[in-house]
Length: 91
Image (tube, rainbow, N blue to C red; front, side):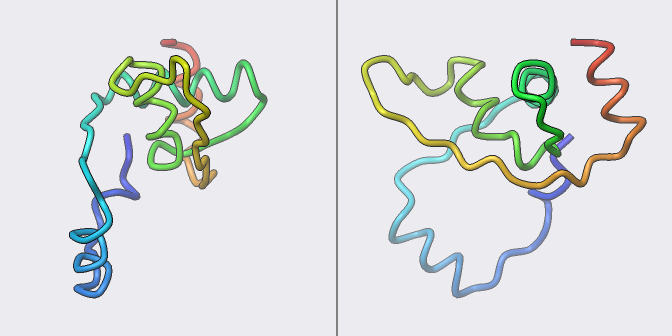
């Protein structure tokens, strides 16, 4: 569902992430599909799985936004039309 997250990472970015990133949060495929559907139905956005990952983390409850100002980067619309239609029909 999030093919854009499977690529390699240059050593320079890995080194930067080791210094700057505090934690990683895993979300499930169903959470990503739910985020894609939410963004399309509620905000009229077509977003690929990798671009919807932050929203998936919020909607699934893996990250709490209660009492916090939260910004989420939503990027990438490179989702296969058939995949999008399936996701929208199932969610």
